[in-house]
Length: 626
Image 1 (cartoon, helix red, strand yellow):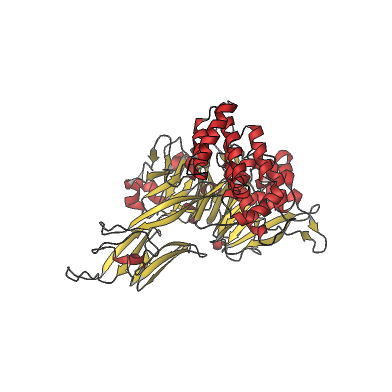
Image 2 (image 1 turned 90 degrees about the vertical axis):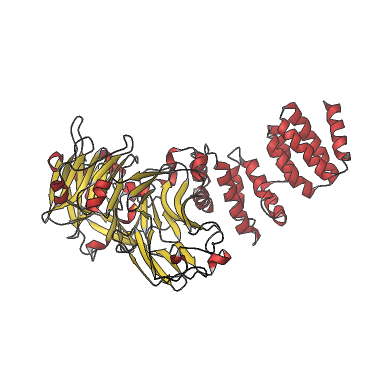
């Protein structure tokens, strides 16, 4: 692609699409269409999608939303041969590829040639978020009147609350309100043609801040969503000496990086009853850090808490930690300043091969001020990486200590956003299927999620930070899948340590951690039932005897959990004891009028003895006790 974010490969018997650092997005191999290799289903005898079988030439369309594929002539035994075929295959891409803004990385936001897709799962119940079949995408069609004259779309940006959207093509722009469902276009075509968006756009409240080029001059324009879209209606115009390349908004600050390698800071002032105004607070050149300004893809910063509370915003630039994404390198710059000296920066390259990154300035526990990056294979996390107040100076090097990576999360899909309050990473994957009764392939974008809670908890427990782990987990204890996250944590630690029989590893700390939550008994038995019986001795040697855990469940009234322990005890104790325990539990279930559990227990008793003798004895004893 022209932006360098994707690579299309075609060969004699197939094709594939890769992200810049190696994530396989979509693919097909001719031989695989018959064997199910790479796709699902079987193709028909008159299959028409020739591009699935082989490629002779291919190229991307302007805007990189469509792939033109030239294929060999199809061979059908019952049809006449004809010429080579040209296919146009549509693609969706992340809006972050063109506009790496904090809001674009916060929300799942996809861009197609004639529409945008907005992820709405964050507003839905927990189960809808993790259900891949849920309808969580809103399709928003870009006005044909704008596409007809300004195709292709070059930029798409979304607001923090995902309610406001703006797109820009070759010239001009148009913006949309999800609540009203209405687009606004320039009222005068000549005004639309006179303005070209450069460097992107960002939303702040109901105002759209745009990097502009008009007649060879560069500026920042601020348009209000509540006003008509016109150059005369711009509430603020700030001239720039050089072309803007990247725009970002953090709190009330606008950050702009320009082609002359200059970092600009503007304060967004919004007094009650007035429109937002931009106040220039300073700039700094980074010629020694950035060799080519046009390779800067992302820009972020963090102002220390003390400066935000008590300092002059005009001085923010001198004390802020700055993050650049430059040609796939994630660069961290931390300022050090003594007395009246000029500010100096300690530079650290956190990672290479980064496709995009997120910053979370607000979060839960150690997730506050954390930095997340995607490198094509995994999400890499630096917890609390941006809090400069907590960083010590290495006296030997006269520099800050290096920030160390905290957590790695391997993913088998392409991530789009992190839902911090739900504890999951949301992304998409490609699904291709065939049908015998259809002459074409069916392509589907599948929404996929991955829990990150157990990864963060494992990080704390590896370092014996029990208190931090409990505090972090308590923020998510209301989630319907919280117990599942704990179960995954226990299972992964068990699998890691059982092979080496490490009885002094992390598992005892995990068990101690689980005891802080009422789901612990359920988590342990679920984990046991989903792992091999040969691992039970190691697990229960640390967790406690299954008999004791069963008695705890009965005493606490967790009858369904106790029933799960029956299956464990059945494999460890004599049959006679299992039937006695079942009778006790059946009696308790009858007293609690849990008839569903009673039915399951009776079915379990019958499975122990198909003659029904144990079942009849149990029913007799239950009646006597009743």
